[in-house]
Amino acid sequence: MEPTNTQTFSSNSPAAGSLPVTNAAQDSKDRPGMSDIARDAKQKAQGSTKRLAAQVRHQATSMVENKKTQIAGHVSSFADAVRKTAEHLGDQHGGIAQYVHSFARNLDDMADGLQSKDISELLAQTKDFARRRPAIFVGGAVAAGFLLARFLKSSDEHSRPGSDSSGSDYYRRD
Picture (cartoon, rainbow, N blue to C red):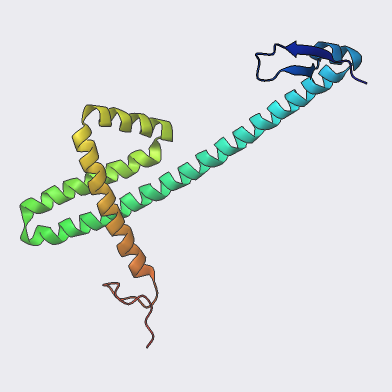
């Protein structure tokens, strides 16, 4: 049987009476090697946790890099579409076409920057810009989100079989 100490609380205490209190130091003396087993288990658990964290970090980084590459591709495609629009405008509206060409070049630069920089660099640059010019950052984020959503929606509608250019018929049954 395990040795226990009995501790008595005063009658003013809500837990009045005797409660068994185990002595951890006494237990470890009675069972030699118990602390070694606990230490080994702790080290194994820490090692497993570190390996799992490294795997999760690697997978997350890989997913973010893949998404970054996809976004850069979408931005590049959008830049091509803007460039074609600028060429079309160039015939009739030369001044506007120059601005649209400039916008397309900026989009290309942005796509190149996404491809060439790692995530930590991109986050640092974004945070720095947001601190320096918060109004432009928020406005640009809203505008970019709107434009990207419209572009992706348009791309998706053209890739669906049986859809017309307006996207009004999801699947045609002719």
